[in-house]
Length: 147
Image (cartoon, rainbow, N blue to C red; front, side):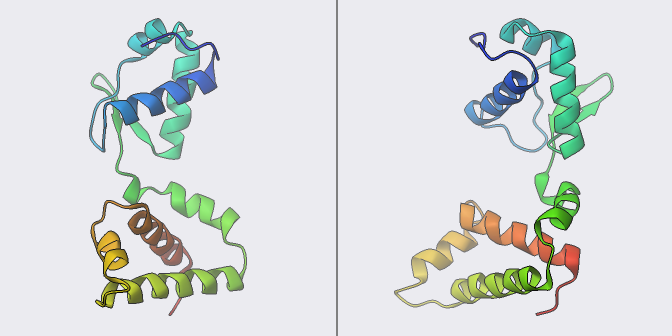
């Protein structure tokens, strides 16, 4: 890993994101140690600790005392509930979310030549459309929006 010219907190966040992407890490995988990050990024351990604490507060990672730092399962993240209150502020927005969820689910259930590819993308659970649908479902659950 090359030292990053942008020092401090932001550099650590960027480096951790890059490590997750390049090593294809997923929930449950262990991140490199504070010492490793500090030495390889040429950044103080206090900056590394600050970045790790911020990621932990967001629910991206969890630190297990004496074991290390691990990536968490974002699907059950309470951060969604916290941010939903700032992102979705009106009943109109809540209704739009419900309507969009309904559209995605309708497309996924229709199996004709025009929508088959989109339906398969939604059902594959490995696409951005699936993740958007899942995120919207979490927002909907937060607000108990009825269809």
